[in-house]
Image (tube, rainbow, N blue to C red; front, top):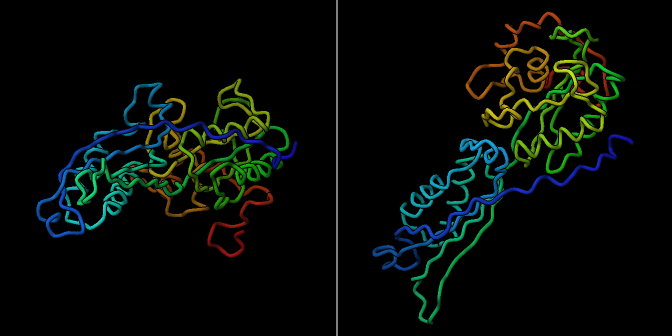
Length: 309
């Protein structure tokens, strides 16, 4: 097998959180009397969300509130007059996507059953579908078992082939001392920045597929491994899922994570505002961080410096 041969499984199917028939009176239409008297509009919102984690742990913060979607519909339809229900649908869709990054796609249907049409009709409606913009995510890479240079090089090839994902940049490779009490060799560590349309849990599934291709085993916590891929952040999303805590729960105290990320983005900070450039100065393992070997695909200098790939 070569790293480019990994056949990624199709991303887990997203669930649908659906709100139908939200009724709001609004003063929209082409004619003056419509803007003066208004109509009752009915709106359906269908949001595509990865609900696996929320459903498993009964955790609303890992899903999307349909009450929030209803409030957005009411807010948009109640605003100043527009001519087209196409405009209302567009504004509702954009605000739903802005309100929650977990919504990866939204369908909005605006009904105007009292539209000024002389012929008998049951309904007049516009339905649109909009996809969320890709999310910036950082992935930390590490290896200290087997041919670590080959594992890191191969992982980068595989990351670039993940579904619905674009590899944006890779850091330099660092050599680091182990931070656990387990007797093991030094690590090679790096980080990469990706843009992805996958949900955090879909992305984690794909990262596990790459680790499995590297014959990664999980028999000893913090023990040696052929390849370790940790999702450090997915946009500004915060989650306490025991299977995927975001941002990564130990990223703020690990120089072997912070230094590579800063190589790519010197301004990066955690969702709570803490600057990585300050955190790395206090990281307990900072003294064990050294320049590592040059590996194909990885930077040779911090991003923006002369010589960066």
